[in-house]
Image (cartoon, rainbow, N blue to C red; front, side):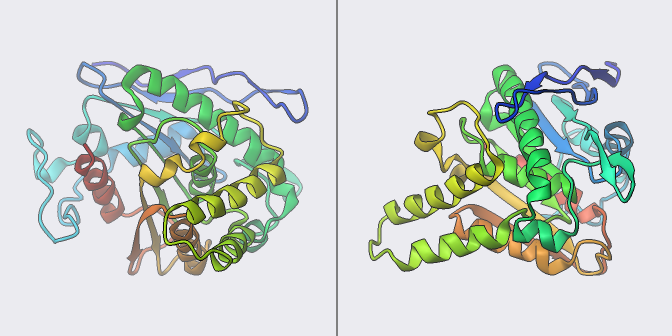
Amino acid sequence: MPQNHHVRAPEITDPSTGDVVAHPDIFISPPTKQPHKQTFVILHGRGDSASNFATGFMGILDFTVAATDSDGKLIEIPGVEYDSITLRKAFPHTRFVFPEARERPVLGSKSPEWFETNSFEQSVAGDEIQNEGIRETTMLVHALLRQEIDAVGAPNVFLGGLSQGCASSLISLLLWDGEPLGAAFGMCGWLPMGTPLSEILNIDASNQQDDTEAPILKACQSALNYLRDELEFVDNPGKADSKVCAFWKTPIYLSHGDKDYLVDLNLGKAAADCLVKFNARVEWRLEKGQVHWYSMQMLADIVRLVKDEP
C-alpha cells in the first residue's frame, strides 16, 4: 500500500513584494487504489501541523451513527463496513493533500498560522495585519489546485479547511480564477473581511433593478475587486474578470458547533450569509453540542457532499 509522505511545497513568488515565499513541506496521503480519480486539498487550523491534523481527520473510526444524509438515510459506501468508515476508506481512489502553515508571530512567540490576526472579529472587519498572510496562503492554495486539476480535472478537486484553515480556504475559493471546483467545505471558521464584503454586496444589490444575473455578477465583481485590492492580490492577471464567479458552480458546505469556545457561532453563520449574497450554493449546518473541532457528522456530511456531486 502506498505510504503517506511529504513533498516540497510549490515555490511562490509574491508579486506584491517580489519575495520568494517558502512554505513547509506538504503532507500527502496517496490513493490506496488506482487509478487516481479525486483530490482533496485540506487546510489545518492555527497552531496545528499538516501531518498531525491529517492523521486524525482521515482516520476517525466509527462515525456510523452520524453517517446519514440530509433525509436521515444511511450513507451507503460499497465495500466498506459501517463500523469502520473513515475518509481514507470512503475515498480509496483519492489523493489527500495537506499543506502546512508557515510560522508567524503569535503573542510574542511563533506558531504555525495561515495569517496573522489580532482577533476573529477584527479579521472579519478587515484588519490589515492579516493581508500579507492571506495573500501568500491563497497563492499557495491556488498553485496546489492547479497541480491537482492537471491530474484529475477541476470537477474532481475539493477544497476545505478547519478554523483558520476554513477562513483561508474560503478566500482562496472566492479568488479562484480557474474552472469551478467539485465542492468546498469549511468547519468552525469565519470569512476574513466578511463585513465590508457584505456591505459592498448590499449596496450594489440595492442599486440594481434588473431581474437577471447581470446585477449579481456586477455586485460580485465589485466585492471581489475590493478583496483583490485590499490583499494586493495578483494571480494570473487578465483571467479573473472572465471567471469572476466560478464559485457559483461549486457547492459549499459550512458547519459550526453551537458550543464553539474559540470562534463564535455567529461568525460562522455570517460567513455563510455573505457567501449566499455572493450567489454561492451554500449548505449551512449547525452542530448542537459541538465544540471547536470537527464532528463525526461533519465528516459524514463531507462524504455525502462529494459523493452527491457528479
